[in-house]
Amino acid sequence: MESNNNRYMGRTWIRGLALCTVLGLTACGGGGGGGGSSSSTTTFNESAATIASEEDAKTAAEATTQAATQAVIEDEAANFAPVAAQIDSFNANEVTKDLSLEILEVANLPTGATYVYDGECGGSASVTSDNQSRMKIVYDNYCMPVDATSNYVLNGVYDVTYTLNGDQIVEFSADFDYTGTYAGETYRSKGNVSCTGEFLDNCTYSSTFNGTNGQAYRISGVSVTGDQYSGYNISARVYDGDRGYVDFQGTGLIPCSGGGFSSGTITFSDSDGEVITATFSTCGEYTVTYKGSSVLVTQN
Figure 1: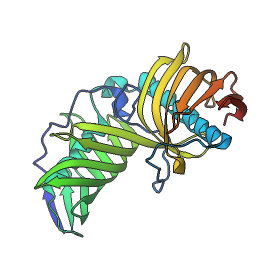
Figure 2 (figure 1 turned 90 degrees about the vertical axis):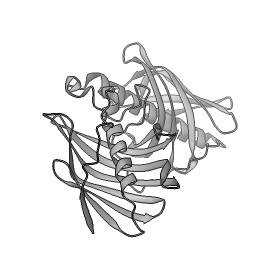
Figure 3 (figure 1 turned 135 degrees about the horizontal axis):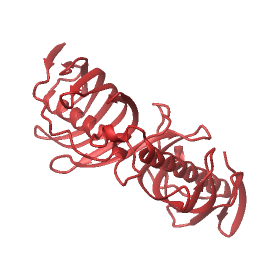
Figure 4 (figure 1 turned 45 degrees about the horizontal axis):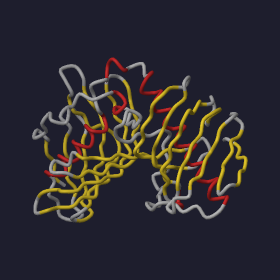
């Protein structure tokens, strides 16, 4: 096993971006975020879902409601986080991605080998090569200085799959589950990132979370406007277990205190273009309309 002090690290990974991305949020139009974490063994069908029955429509409506609820939670966290003034120029997801990529570009490991990088101000990052297209980075109190008075400390896993063109990484994706501590606050981020482009700076984030119903979901491409008073307008893609994903749009959504919505609508289409609508009028239940038929569904 080898060891190296990673003095090669530059400061190009420190970028002045908004708080919403620090929390891993997509609500401000960027990458993915996460709410409550889901099981690390959760897998999702990457194909578009096909709605073939009323039960399928109810399940997809539940997934979109859970995803919209999560987007509201993240949006409100971004707007009302008490440490906003301290960390509004720090982007934890991007910093961690860039650090992981720089470590991979230096670690030219034979299959099965492990390399250990010492943090600049403590801790370490262990890199293990599964093969020539996959490496796993485990951060153990890995510390890097951000400025004269603050450090960023990482714990967790970055499981990376990449494509090489010669010695250059041209595609990069990773499943990650880590905590980052900065300015006295610790944040949990769990999800996936995929990057392409000449500088691997064209990145798409998605995240997994447990809904209020206890089910695991993945959400990506979130856009949120509005607020809890005028109603939220939300669009996103949500993955639900084996059924695949649906893209949805929510309008005029007023959140309930326990999750779900008291008013507004969510519409989504399946792989065949069949449009399903979820209509909210109370916090207790909502109406799902599918192929001209309507059914009441209890909100969890």
